[in-house]
Image (tube, rainbow over the protein chains, first blue to last red):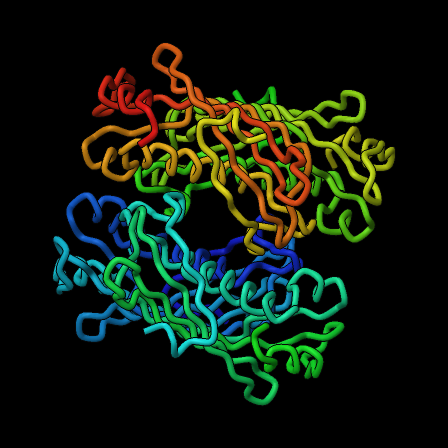
Length: 135
Length: 135
Length: 135
Length: 135
């Protein structure tokens, strides 16, 4: 069922990510998704930290996220990603599934833009790598 | 300019909320907004923690957030909120402005639902309090 | 070199754990160490979340941590743990090593106590499981 | 009772800082204390973020923290700080008190060192400012 995604990352809930209600706090799903994007681009040969040192920042411009099933302590999950370029935006479709029953946990679209030396802009080198085949 | 909001909360960036890029990490804006909602409902006489102990959990169902201007170290900001009920959803319009120049930082809609003893449901007592006048 | 530890957990830095300085923020090492303890006790058949539901809370009483080498973006590391009981305290010796060169990253002692129904106390069942052989 | 401290900062628990047990997670006290140190040095005219841009990083070398009384949802607290220089270490004594009853929440010593262009070293300009009178 994960074959429709470009990239998948198995992860596991850490207890400090859960809040008073005993479920993962809503903000932490964005952390999971960011980590997934950064692992995805790393496999494409792009380091988020090195980009920053070169004056290129990938910045989140917009997120739409639907929370379907809450993750709890000890849950394992699979964080999945698809990617496409749309004008100057890098559009990531990011879904998270609970491993035990493949239930959809969260479904998001994350739009990222690149800021080159402080200005919103195209970054052809980045786009080329993102569109390359997985090694 | 904040008079169009039901509730506003002045806050300040903490350095640990900033990431490698030197700006507040995208997930932390959801933390700011959650804290703002909880302070808002607290002023209405509703405690998030006490609700949980009574078996009522307020859970985020959906968020749409546009990031307009990044917050940096030392920035002060105002976290603003409007609220309306729509069926079983509690809809929070949440905007954040940088204090120094009133620039819009982030604009979000956060849909919350209440889970009563494990089931999605209306919670009339909660709605009554949320719609009451500010004390 | 990890054979002197009761339990080891390979982990990896997530970029959101790094702060303005580009290194993992000091508080996040406590997160790594908590996750390691909880994975350790889970292997012993103890669930932190289930303990809480039974009215038993494991609470950190004291931490001494020396930061030796900072972790950076993309670093892999091994989080190691030894355990002993001392009176009512569960004492965890927790060391973190950078995977690339086995350099010591952080060295800590974490003292945990159990709170049973709101009171500091012994929890014989817990101790027995913690002292049992690894399955 | 706070007159024995050089600097005090009133703060309030945010619900996302609490974990499954309903109390503030142990790592978040380090966040509170870091924020307190940074607000303290800011009043002395030192910006943590600007220091980093100049190639000077203040890095935590060692922390000893005793957790005395847990903070819960809605708790207000006062984060207090004393400072002294000891050789190349900046030593911060940091205590947190619950506001409602002045109970000691946590007591810590945090040793910080400065890394100048990648090397551990004295930073006379920094020390002079830290030892100056509060404006």
